[in-house]
Picture 1 (tube, rainbow over the protein chains, first blue to last red):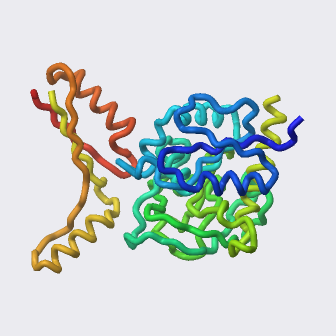
Picture 2 (picture 1 turned 60 degrees about the vertical axis):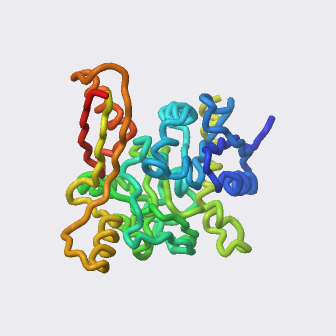
Picture 3 (picture 1 turned 45 degrees about the vertical axis):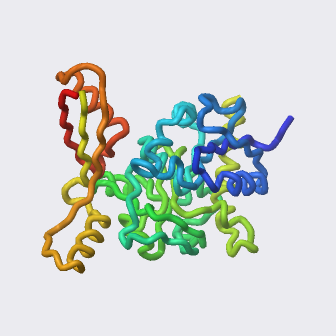
Length: 231
Length: 80
């Protein structure tokens, strides 16, 4: 029996971090499977889903808007409704917000410049599936590379998220005009998370940081548990 | 029939694109107040304008064309 939990990486036209994500997941003990967005079912035995970074559909209309209605997203919705762990990175985060699987929306950076550098991100809630290998207050060094990463939600939503621990990651500085320096949020149930920084580009000291491995290893752990629960 | 949908950044929502355009217009010597940048979507539909057709375009806006968190929209219908 295959002990490596299967993680489906959904590939949209314009995704460009799908292979890095798959490589990182493989290095962390998962069995990554690239899934074309036109597919309407996830592979049997899927333990987790990762929506990768990139520029799906050329960011037409709004970032992530067109990808959010792709056939594969119906499967992702059903998987999430069954409690399956789903992680969206960068464009994947934008897609999850547009799909209303996560609260808020990602808007153009306030400085109207593409940011591409390593940033410090603080773990605000170490009790989620995705941060189970992190410590509360821990600072992770992760690269960001986005033009539309300013997370925004209305005041009531923002306050509620903070009170319920759904703001999982915050930038240690103002990176893009994101409300409350939010870098990553989780849904109320705790099984769907999105973040703008790229953990898949920070899984080895040779890449400048291995901190991203902590988040992705949390996803792999959650995938293994979900496979057991679903079996 | 034709539908024209005007999508705008909601009032009170920061519009960095509008601000950049405003600043460029000022550099060109124009005296302008706040500038907001939105989007126009033109589409053609079968049939004639009707409350049902309007309701359908409303659904398009809610499901895809606009994000109600940050955008407002206005629908105009006309016979082709």
